[in-house]
Image 1 (cartoon, rainbow, N blue to C red):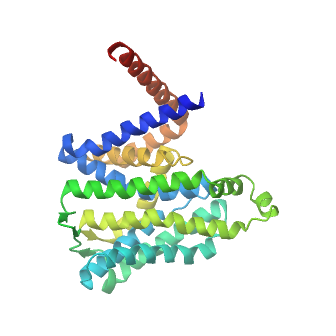
Image 2: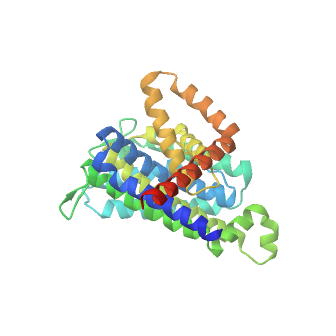
Length: 324
């Protein structure tokens, strides 16, 4: 039974990888861009899911960390004329350092207090980006961010940029997947279920949560780098409360407790956003209704998807027996 489950998972993983790797060969330019945007947006959703799923901490500042990383890349590249990889490495390291500094205060809060505090921090970053005109460019932002050319490969082109984003996204998913299934991940879930008991067993709960906050900032920081490359401009609009709520919605739609669900939620929300915005001006209202329905009937939808995948596997087995 266990072996069959492993085979099923490996088979599904092979199909997903083949689909993603072959996409530039058959997908239209619109679909390729949608996949690219969904992939690096899923990094911020992964950042949210790691805290919410493993520790039960709902953060409303992960989108702001993305904006900070993107701003650092834009400032260093456009204002100070620094070249790759200095802006990118600086953005990732400073974003992680900022998360470490904020984590010193955040580790003292739980539940709704953690949610509200991270929301206030996100709003503070947005206000700073709007008012610090000399550095951030105000509401106009910083224009002229360009993706680098590496080893003769122009990352400004859609296909190389897609594969670059896909590579880093897969690396983060694999790393966090193994981390969540390690002893460290087991400790995180123990803290989520019964923090007092884990403390009585001798674990330094605050230190573990602080390390998790720093780790969760890394996918968001890389998302910021890709966001700056993709837009070519960075402005405070990318750091609003709406942006942080979008990350939360995508995380819940895909399943906040699931690392694998992060890309599903990201792709689903981005697809809804694009198509509904083209169809009606009240797309936010429709997105909200769909979100409520997903929350109410998510288990039924997941059950339907699992049954459909099981039927697909049965059909493939019959096909193999007949023709092989």
